[in-house]
Image (cartoon, rainbow, N blue to C red):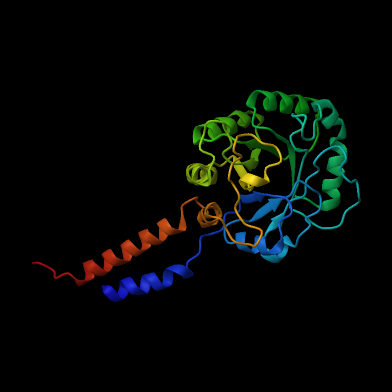
Length: 289
């Protein structure tokens, strides 16, 4: 029995979590060595730009370009991407800042870019976490853009509870399309936004995102306290996944360790070890007759 325990412990570091096809990262200026640190558990990402600015494919990860606002380049192709992300938070003035009718009028040009890039999925403009504002904007955009290609709905969330994220996503189910949660982290006033708070939030939310069928993709907003351009809380949330030197933060280690079903690798290993030891114990016990 002791030999079996030792064998299991030796093999444990060799076990890796099944990488989720849903799990991504939202972060500008990621370097290739940072991507390699994330690749065990993260399958895609974006940087709010049309150009990847790094060799994502070297890490076996997908890069999804974005047309951030109305000034996006109309160039004619090059590259082959699985998805194109629409305007970034046009419903607030500090981002794309477009009314729904203007965005709808420009959408055929976005579709042209999508065709040139050969994308399989064209994702809607991404709404901020204000449900009332975002829902109203999206409804007006879809009403004004009859016949437009919109394959999935993108939303952002900075709610700090599972119930808040569920309420947001359930609200957007009314549009009858798959949902991409392209920014999320815990960033609400009066809540623990430290790295320990982020870890607690992540462990609650990611397993639900994994099992919720309407959620097709999700991307963690990976920024440390000193990196936030637009402050939401004071101090800013400590939500970075990977340092500039390529080292995973404690939060990053949790994110990549969550398997395809959202369960932590360590938990799976503990279950496997217990099962193996129980089996060994049962085999070595005398049979009483």
